[in-house]
Length: 113
Image (tube, rainbow, N blue to C red; front, top):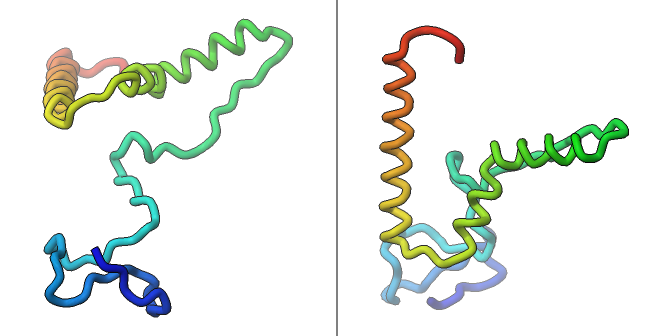
């Protein structure tokens, strides 16, 4: 890819006409990509646990919050490289599981949520 003039008003990189391009027509940027709305990495905000003289209880609460947020599951998944095909299969499997769980919950009838 050829970098355009750095004094460009938009500040984006553009390949000159006739060069090999990805075909998307969109300029490429050096800035990190913005996370998609449903992306796991798009989490923001601080987690807060109040300690009132009992550090063990506070640690237990924090661990429970981290488990619920899925931090430990993500760390375990990132420990080893996962091929894109394996990632797709895993995501589909998780999606089917989530859908079955939701259907079972609806079949159970109205109740506590």
